[in-house]
Image 1: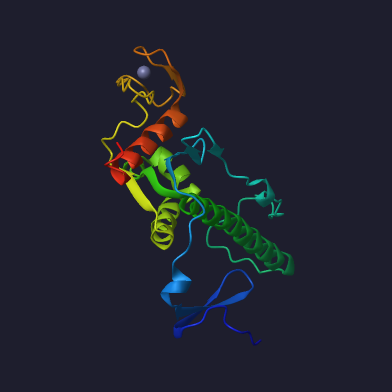
Image 2: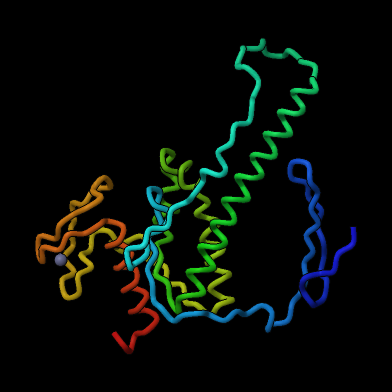
Length: 238
Ligand SMILES: [Zn+2]
């Protein structure tokens, strides 16, 4: 096949890979700055609470969830009969076909997942001049095996990497909250700031004993992250 490159610039290299059946050629091009930097569509300041239950909760209360239904397809695996270890089975035509289908399904799931991560990270960077986000707590959670699998599966690491390079392209300031920032436990009501010390991971909603505001755990966290982003990105205004 022959195809014109989508980007102008100097070709730096190329890499050939194969996923399932198809082959891919990735070409690295050194593009001019004008092609690299992007225009934002908004100057908002947002906070994103990223978690396992909801992928991301924004400070206006929006909850971004994944739609993985399209990826859930039956793949027709062979029966689960136990086979003595060391036995070599002939690879039947049907076995090979099942392998192909499995690889195809896997690739489809991976594609749907990356598409979601690309779109979500682009949207956050395009619409905001600053985004408050919790990052270190995720690394901390990765050491806990029960949740590590779920987090890895959601591709959070990949998501943060995308946010970082897209923030640079859109001129958006990423404001990471360190692991000691009590985004969930702090009452986000302006002028209150009560710290609910005994909030546990299972408390999805709570009422501030000081000002009486009812909080959704994730929305409250996102609002605190948005405030942190404001304080960091616009220090004069605050
Ligand atoms: Zn309060």
